[in-house]
Image (cartoon, rainbow, N blue to C red; front, top):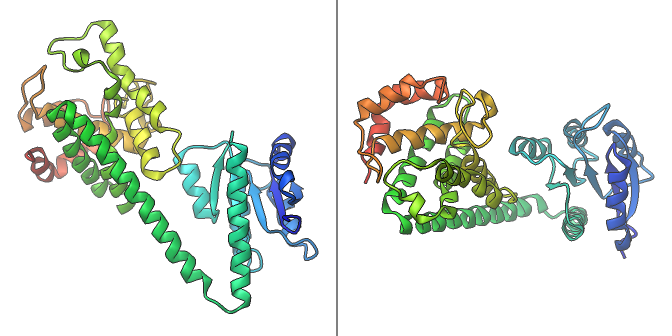
Amino acid sequence: MNARFHILIIDDNVDNIQVAVNILREEGYEFSFATHGQEGLDILNEKCNPIDLVLLDIMMPVMDGYETCREINKNPLLRDIPVVFLTARTDIDSIRKGFEAGGVDYVTKPYRAEELLARVKTHIELYRARKLLQEHNLSLESKLKFEHHRLLSELEENQKELIWMLTELMESTSDETGKHIRRVAEMSALLAKHHPSLTKEDEDILFHAAPMHDIGKLTVPYDILHKPGRYTEEEFKIMQAHTTNAWKLLQRSERRLIKSAAIIAHQHHEKWNGKGYPRQLRGYDIHIYGRIVALADVFDALTHKRCYKESWSVESAISYIHDHRATQFDPELVDILQEHIDEFIEIVNLS
């Protein structure tokens, strides 16, 4: 039934091509292959061999996947062909670049056979439906945009609902923690708002993902989490593990907010000088979201009472943060905090 559907696989690793073919062959698809982007473009431009979908790797010689995808989308005769990135790169920046280049989907290796089959089938069916409607002079583009926007909005709302449900769960174990995570969300969004390299989208992501920064503490025993005195070395190791535990819980998601929350939970205890935990990341190796939440988390913790300490004055907290500028904290973020301190004090005073 699918023999009329033709898939082009562009990957410099022949074994990767063979794996994809073995999975898709049983559905009756036809295949063409290329080992770099320019070779793939040559195949796409052959009039006698129309392509219905492209499976595209990123890291390749001659022309990488991003450039290949951009070239496809520059060509009016090719730009409607769906391009699905099929790659081992799982970081948020790579995913973002893939969609910015014009990809319609992003599948990470190793993938399940069922996942690849379902996504290929969906995008081929959408492509063929689009061509059919265009032939009948119907405006599919506006309909698809509306539906895509609706689905994305619904998905984003589901993620936000999940995050705030987990926030409520944390709050049920400690009212102090519940208020803290709300203030950290506000401060993180404010730092993003005043950061010259971040966007309104980053501000929104941080507001909704930052509340998950301590979600891993749900895995820490109650008596350790609420211990009033100093931790033993073993207890401190258990407490530190909340960052890695959260990462393991969240990192498999491909959804924007949950992936951001995974990064934040994993990195918000890293320090600018590389002496933080769990991976001793240094400077710009720490994701900007992790650096932002690290500062917001400490500033709020210092200015509020905890079971193991009294609250500090805002002046004392600012002095501490300034003293740890470029050692514990991103110096640019410290400067932003100090330049807009009145706005942050308003958040500190939220109950």
